[in-house]
Structure formats: structure tokens, C-alpha cells
Amino acid sequence: MASLAHHFRTMAFNNAWANHRLLAACAQPSDAEFGAPRASFFPSIRHTLNHNITVDWYYVDMLERSARAQPPNMDSDRFFEPEQPFATCAELTLAQRAVDQRLIDLCASLTDAQLDDPVQVPRRSGVLIESFTRILAHLFQHQIHHRGQAHAMLAGTQVAPPQLDEFFCANEAHLREKDFAALGFDEARIWAT
Image (tube, rainbow, N blue to C red; front, side, top):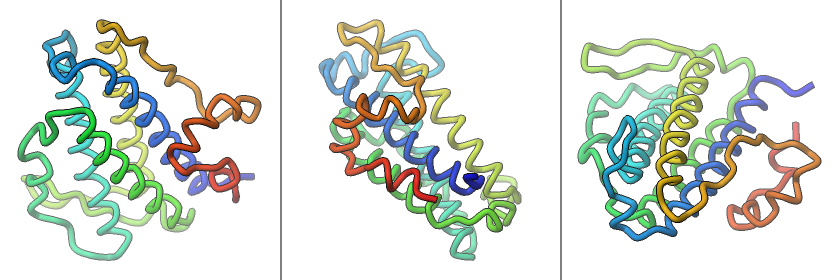
């Protein structure tokens, strides 16, 4: 039986795969369309995906520091300045892939015993304490939520939004081979326990 730590590792791979698929689709419209005003929580695809990456930087840094027993980054506001660090999808894609790999590496290093360990969460009001389990669950949910918004906004362009609602079903491995090759992923690495 796979452990909870293994589940989070598979979620990190799934997160990177979904980001890859969505960003590949978002790279097809022009930069003007990428930043064009649209109806959603954030006013454009660009703004939405920039928000996802800045939040990833904040949480992944926090998780990495806690895993190394380092103090929290009390200058964490820097992850959100500027609010939209990337003007183009190409720039954003490179940065998203890098932080996705950091999250995969972090999740691959965790054991079940560590999942209840404290994570120091720097907030303006001070440092809060959560567990790895809660922060990882929150981070994956945050990504899913905003990817869905960008996905819906992409439907308002000439580009068909990619399918993002699948997990890693064994009988559909052939459907993700091309994406996995581009990402350097393989089924054995993801599913090894």
C-alpha cells in the first residue's frame, strides 16, 4: 500500500504535468491575448498564472526551509513583488517548471513521519505553525483552483483548453507519454514506493 508521503509525491508530479499542459496551451495565443482582460477572479490568464507562481514560490520556500529546520523567510513579501513578474507565457513557463521541480524534490524527500512536522508560516501578523500535510494539501488545492480559472479563460480564445481533470490512471499512460518525455518524467519514478 502506498503511503501518504508517496501520495504527495504523486500529487507534485501531477501538479507539474497539469501546469505543463496548461502552459503549453496558453503559449499558443499571442502575448496580447495572454494578457487580455477576461472575466474571472484575476482579470487575465497572465495575471492568474502569475499569481499561481508567486504563491508557489512563497509556499515552496517555506516548506524547504522547514524541511531543513531553517527559520522562516520573514521577507516573504518579496515573492509577490511585483505582483506579475512575467509578461509572457514563455518566461512564466520556465519559472513554473523550476518551482514545480523544487516541489517534486521536496515531496520526494518527505517520509510519513515528517508529514506532521511543523511548518513555520510567515505572515504579516507573525509566524504561524501548520503541518506539512496541511500546507501541501492547501498548495495543491490552490493550484487546482486557479488552473481551473485559467483553463476557463483559455476557452475564450481560439485555443482548445487541454484536459486537466485526469490523474495518473495506469491504463492511460500512453496518453501522457509525449508530455512526460518533455518533462523528463517516467512512470516508474512516479510510482516507485
